[in-house]
Length: 244
Image (cartoon, rainbow, N blue to C red; front, side):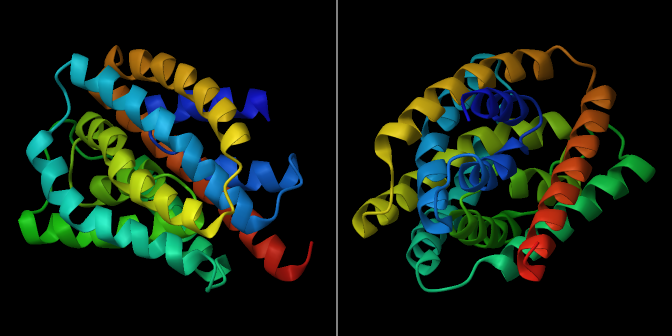
């Protein structure tokens, strides 16, 4: 689990989609139940969110106006998503998340957008994206970047802007979501903190790699990561439904 946390951090810092691996890792390697795994991974993403935001902000690539608009939808939706976790089964939501991530990754690989050409939707569109991403990621414990990056790519946002804003957007999701999970008493704070520190160290490495890569190459890496993460989550979700 410690090695997994470091790898997840590198992927989050570099391409934003590593968070999809941590909740199933806690179930498979840590023997945790799905609700505890979701809550604990959400707590761990507090650390990656702080470090990832600082790393990209220091390089001046975080689009703060975009983040502000996203946060209007992210914060309340994330709290509701955490509350709904104990009431709703997650497989259907995970399946949609897997399909979206996989399809966006494949599309980017087959038809890459011109690097740096997109700024994304307007205010209403960003608030709507925030609502959908905040609720879904809090419900499934996948942080935020794993869904936000492919959605922003699909809407025409340049890869480095999508990855950078997703780092800060993590905090708008995991802070209210963690509050909801703490109220429910299902978070392993000690384990989540240990994994979060290790993942945060990996996030620094990933951010350094991302900001030193050419935009076109970063777009290819993001697309490949989305494809692999989406495929992994799809197989695991279908396998879980089939009782594999």
